[in-house]
Image 1: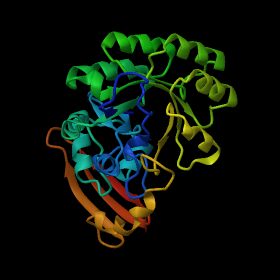
Image 2 (image 1 turned 135 degrees about the vertical axis):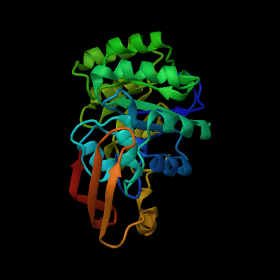
Image 3 (image 1 turned 120 degrees about the vertical axis):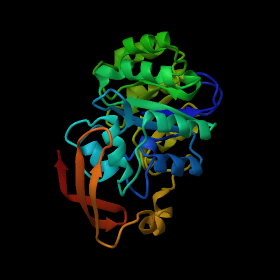
Length: 307
């Protein structure tokens, strides 16, 4: 996941900003991690954007919630194994859904949007530090533009050693007890925030964050539900797919009327043939059928890979 904002370092007097999860929705579709979703969310007023990051076969980073089903969500079809960067760029060029970013295109986007930040979620947790070291070498002023997520207490110190200033401790991969969570947060008082899944949060953790005023997020929420009383605290907010940067009104309904015009497709089917990489010998034919336009749902009825 990635995010960028011109905020002071750490939990500050500034209210904790809301986060557009996986870049935010695109015409009702979630997890696209796409440039189009980023632009849409930024235009709504978001300043922080969580992005999923996956490695290609040649160790480049792209914005994707893993391969196979992650690719299906973003591109409209599954990719069984990680392709090379060149192959990925070919496949995304012809996607009828959206354009998942690469690290390079994300950097270009950040350079155009001066008031935003990226929160990272590296989908292979064993390579989290590797990914964040790569980002640090490629992103100018990375500590101000990137908020990395640490999956365990040890990674927090490792990220500080790389040079990251604002760090989120996320619990969705952490199997430690509530006691360990509380100990870690108290030991690292300068954390940007702690992020807790809706399925993981409990009253003890809520009472801890509230009583000691440590900033925290709950993810992923698309309505206030039983947490509405927490929004009175400046140090609490959420990751969301559909809600706007403030309030509890879904932004999805605003986009339904434009969903049909976003895609250059006929009414029921799109066929893209002879998609070839210029640097590798792999080519693809992809046929899509449209199941719904509200939100758009595409199914790859045939994918042919040729040598």
